[in-house]
Image 1 (cartoon, rainbow, N blue to C red):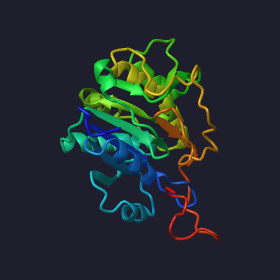
Image 2: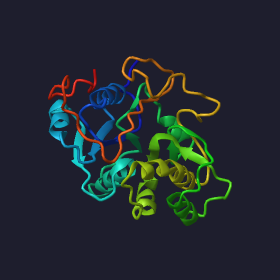
Image 3: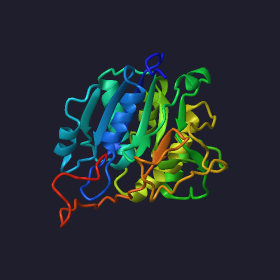
Image 4: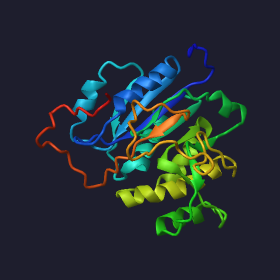
Length: 264
């Protein structure tokens, strides 16, 4: 099957926090992107101040169509990296049809045909969406009120990972510019209000790229899954590593200076 006839372009914006002692899949993720979209993709890794970022830079050295930038804003975790990446994209006039924003532990496993989003005029969509009742947090409520979100709206964006059409990228940045995320709790809140933001950007319509998380239950345990070697019919697969804001690199016995879990 040929992957060279796509009529669209796609940029992958990957929020990264590389920590020794935690699984790292960035090289595997990059390999898959370049396998599926060899001529029509750009990869922008936005690093959240990893201490050993030079190891990732060495690992991915000379990889075509890939850039690594450091998020030096006060906002961290996924949303902080996404905002920093979106600002970089706009300021540098990086053109593309779609922008995929994901965690570094939520990797593409099968080629997604982005032309289907073009055909359906989808402007913003979570990768996986499902209903959740925990929308009472102050930060979540503040964003929902700002968007005039319907009171019965309870659709979240799982793992803070989603796709935007180029036409709504500036509006996304405008909506989120004053939201500062510094803790893991903030990042969890993001799942709730990002669902509402994507709903608004998609002309008040819900959509999901890779299942709704209710009727299409993941056939794997995202806490224990072998992300590299487990096949799936879904387009993306998630491995939970649960890195907190105070996470530290582990250099104890049995851990080499080069982080063995990275990739293979």
